[in-house]
Structure formats: structure tokens, C-alpha cells
Image (cartoon, rainbow over all chains, first blue to last red; front, side):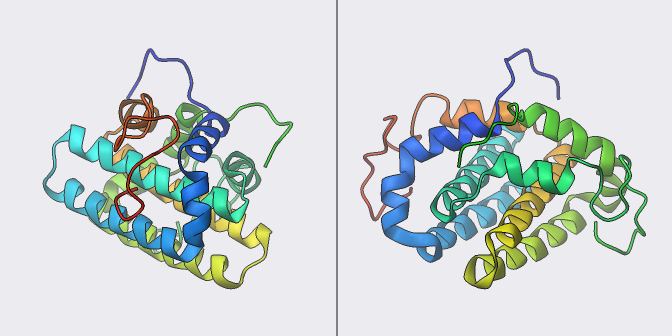
Length: 106
Length: 106
């Protein structure tokens, strides 16, 4: 789980996905683009059940890409969204190591 | 879509989510954790249809958090996965600005 590569920022990935796909996905709209995200989520589920680590990694990347392109179409900054929600600890209990009830979310 | 905050790295977010949730989610396993991801995906769909930008941002963050915790349980490095799949342009056409057929994926 460690990598010697330089850090990859959400901001840079969101910009990359915008350059690659924004024009096409903006024309398709959020609803149509969401359908593609769902297809990728299904492929991720299949890979988690019976795929190799490489196949699983590729499906995680695809889900992230489609999620990011929807964020672009909806005008949401993912890094900002994450920092708002998770930057101060678990949104449920406020702790860095979650102490929420196991049956609860998360 | 621009932010004055410092870059947020996938590596740092994956580490944060690991600290917060790994013990709990590893015990729950990939299958059980995937169910929570699906619930969040549903909430994102609802927010995209009728939520405020703030609600949409919060749901994007939740989907990212659950996706990341599953990656932790499965042992996948998200930054590495993204760079492998999208680091050299669109995986479909190889271009920085996608020229894949509109009916195709993506």
C-alpha cells in the first residue's frame, strides 16, 4: 500500500478528467453519466469477487473517474467536499479513529 | 471549482480513511462494506436530483470515503490504480481529450 510515486492530488485528477471528458459528459448530463457510473460499480463488484488485484485496481480507477466526471458536470470540487466532511475526523463521532456504533453508519 | 486550499492527495485521504475505519471495515469485510457504499451511491443520486450543492458535495465525499475504505480492505492503492489507468490519457482512445465514439465507453 505504499508507493514511491509522487502524491496524486484530487484537484489534479479532477482537472485531468475534466480535460478528457467534460465536453462529452456535460452534453450527456448528470443522469446519463450516472448510468455509466453504475455500470462501473457493477464491474468493480465483479472484480472484487473474482478479479486479480490488477483488475480490481483498474475498476477502482474507473469508478473514481466516472464519479469525478459527474462531480465536474455537477460543479462539485471533490477535494473541498472531502475536507468539509472528513477533515475534522469521522463525521459520525468526530474521532480520528471512528468509535461509532458498529451497527451505525459508518 | 477552484480552491485556495492546499492539494489533497489520494494517498493522504486513503491513509486518513484507513486510520478512521480500517479495523471496523476489515472485520465487516468487502461484501458488507460494499452494501454501505451502495447506500451512499443511492444518497448521491437523490442529492443530484434534488439536493443543494452542499448536500451534493457531502454525498460525493461519502461515496469517496466508502470506495476508499473498500480499497483499503482489498489492499488497492488508489493513486497507483488511477495513474496506471488514466495516467497516459483516455484508456479508450489514448488521447488527453477523449475522442472515443459517443456511444462507446466512456
